[in-house]
Length: 356
Image 1 (cartoon, rainbow, N blue to C red):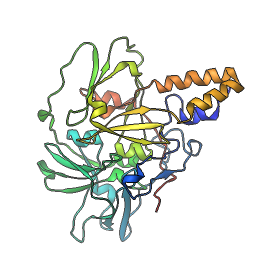
Image 2 (cartoon, helix red, strand yellow; image 1 turned 135 degrees about the horizontal axis):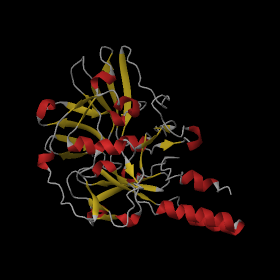
Image 3 (cartoon, rainbow, N blue to C red; image 1 turned 180 degrees about the vertical axis):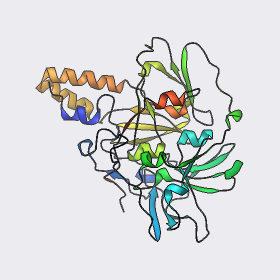
C-alpha cells in the first residue's frame, strides 16, 4: 500500500526528514534581513554518502585570492572570508578538542588584519551576536538561529588567535573537510564536574554552561537495539554540528530550564524546532511538530481512503513521538564506539540561497 507523498516527504523513513525543504521561520518584525530559503527536494539528493561517493559540494580551490561567503542560518549575519593563493583552506583549518568546540563541532580558520593572512569582512549584521566565555575559548553566536560564527582562545597554544567558523561557509563540504583538517588537543574537562551516575540513567546530557540538562533513561530499554544515531550535511545541521540520537519521548527527561532557558529556532515551515541554550548557545535538542496542516491532511486522507489514512497516521504518530537530542551534549560517551554506527546522509545544501 503506497503512502501519501506528504507522509514520505515530511517524515523520511526510517526516522524523519527534517531537512527536505528548509524554510526558516523568523520574526521579521525584529530584523530587516530576509529569511533564507532552500528549494531542494529530497528526491534530488543522494540517500547516503559513502567514502567513495562524491559529495554534493566540493572545497573551492584558491587561485589568487579565494573569497568564501558565509552566514548564520537565518541570514541575519553574513560575511566574506578571503584567503591568499599561498594558503589552502584545508591546510589552514583545524578543530579543537576542548568541550565547547567539541559540543559545537567548530572547524576554525584563523582571521587576521595582516595583508597575507585570512581576512574576515562582515557584509551584514545588526550587532546582536551573543558572546559566551568558557575556560579556554570565547565564541559569538546568532541569538536568532544559534549559529556560532567567530571565537578566540584565551589559553593554551591557540591563545589570542582570532577565528571564524568554517561550518558557516557556503559551498564547503564539511564531511570531506573534517577528514582532512588537523586536530588541536586541548582538555578542559577538569573545569567541568560530571553529573553523578545512577543505575536508571543511561546518559546525562547538558549544554556547556550546565543550564539545560536532560537524562536518557535506561529502564525498559533493549540493549540489543540501540537508538539510531544520524548526521547529515544540510544547511542547518552543518551549522549546528548536530549529530542526532533518536530515542522515544518516554526515555528523555528534561530539566525545567530546557524550555525556560532556551530559545527555539523554527524552520522547515515550522515542522521542527531547534533548542539552544540562551547562555552558551549549544543546540541541545530538537522538537518535531510536523507540518502545520497535518491534522487537516490526515482528516482528508481518512475520508478518501480510510485504510491508507490509518496507516499514515500510525507512522506519523511514531515519528512525532521521537525526541531527537544532540549526541555532542552527552557525558561519558564512548565516541569511538558511537562513531562506528553514525549513519551519515548526504542531504547537501543545494538550493539553499540567501535572499537579497
